[in-house]
Length: 454
Image 1 (cartoon, rainbow, N blue to C red):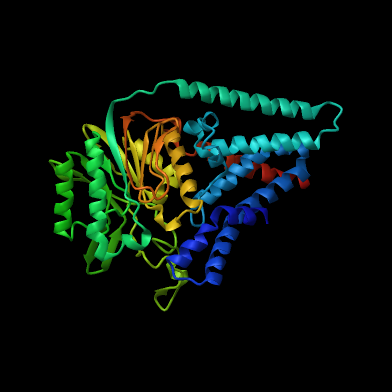
Image 2 (cartoon, rainbow, N blue to C red; image 1 turned 135 degrees about the horizontal axis):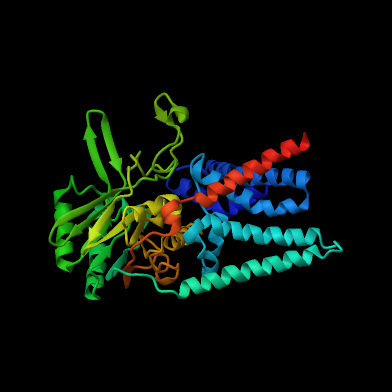
């Protein structure tokens, strides 16, 4: 019940999306939301079962294993079922930056571990409060020491300068186009013009790289030469390279394939970069297990009717700008720590994230999505520049500090300076080693309870 209740608090907005954009009725929309919450609740349930088993087998001291078990269940949520690591426990610390710096080694899972360990030590102190050996005082002292060390290390880390290979002035465009208008063919020219006007503003403030959000240009420019020409004109007019969301389409004898995409147009060289989204939104951009969820060849569980069945991309490809490299993730991809690090591995010195959170209105989803993007900057020690259609657009530095940002549904060109930061963090280089160690340790501990019983 606890997992389901927390799921409702975190994911209530999914019912609004599927009703408004999927055409579902109120009862069906609420039912879909509750099913998702129950699926997410499976993982806290596994945590509770494992922790209870450890307590019965090894006593109250086994609470010190609970943080590893918690991280193990988060890893399972990230790598199984529909791969939905939305709002893991560690993200709660996205404003407590000294605590969050450990993520450059462990990913967000290390921060989840610290939060869970804090709770475990408090629970242990409460349960042994009558112990004549003052075990509860040692637990409180251990908690204070752990937090002090982590805080001191994080503060020291944030005070240190990072190596830079160059800097660039960037304009992030937030045109704040309502979702109902975004795919309206009659408003396509008007929508692009709104981005163009803001791009001029950014260029006037010195921007040499301008970033538009996901699906800013809604029709494939490969098939609309006039739109492609318009985009080249905007790049030449502003004198800046323009990164923008634009899908790709390919028709073959086997059917049509569509990719959620991003492109960059250089003022002189034209189209120089193309990226296809790898991590698609389940039931929004694709339907998992279509063979099981289809009847008579027709998919029955498409929850957002305004989008098509997309083909996933195959690599975290990087682009080049002014002798430097950058990676561009699209929307939902920003919640996948282990995927975003591949841009760094492939040489990216700067991270871009283009997104369209207009689906979610003024619910808690956009701030949740933004909090997760902050961790991608920390994990990779790169600037994360986020351009969102309706917000939150932001400059996030490699320590996770939000240098500047917009408000939801604010129309604005956010202009600032960002650095190209070379190199790899331990997390970028090795990935979820810490998380998998927690999985292995938890499995071994639970298996030992069976041996203990026998």
